Length: 249
Ligand code: IYR
Image (tube, rainbow, N blue to C red; front, top):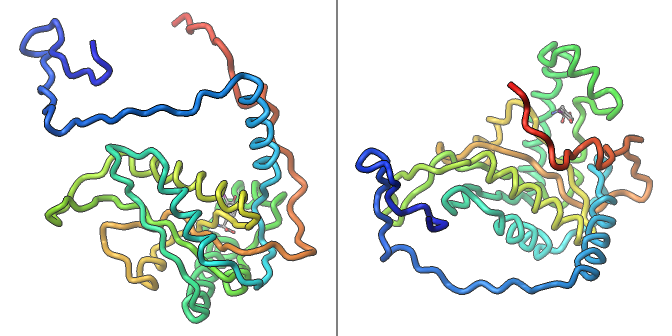
């Protein structure tokens, strides 16, 4: 059995898989750097220590950010694995103060309805209490850049005909993680903001029907007096299970 699973199974006609067209599958050699154990651990520790220092930030300065920082973060996000390698995302970059203002007004409108208009259930409001969030999003006008990641529910083939995408949410989630990791590595701060509902972003940003807003990121430098909630991450034992036994039933 090859890794592609392209061979017909023993089950005869019924279990037969379509023959993969060899004309379309053209692999090239891949030789990732082989790293010794000590170096692996040293690199892993350094990366973990750096990423463990990342926090979601809500206090931003208006200090300028080089355009290349945003370009690099988007390019890094786009290295994410994706369903059928469709890369079903669009990162929309906003630097125009007028558009930022429109986004702030629309986002605060929605958030006010959620927080104070009874749209968020009590348990949700309670869950957010330790984070100190409310409907006010003034940072949306302060930051030098807002990026909105859109998920492409469908895409287009080379002829421009609509084409199905696969694992769109999962692919976008992975790209989002890489995006915020890249920003953190470059010394920038951000927040994965999901004003709900986010439909207003499609309108303000003139996005086509096949795209849906996924996450909004205000991006900039944290202010010198920025604060974050006093919360801790779960220890390894609470986020992993090693060599579990099969269940009896
Ligand atoms: N979208 C709201 C509410 C909110 C929801 C979750 I889940 C958070 O972790 C934080 C906030 C807001 O941005 O305030």
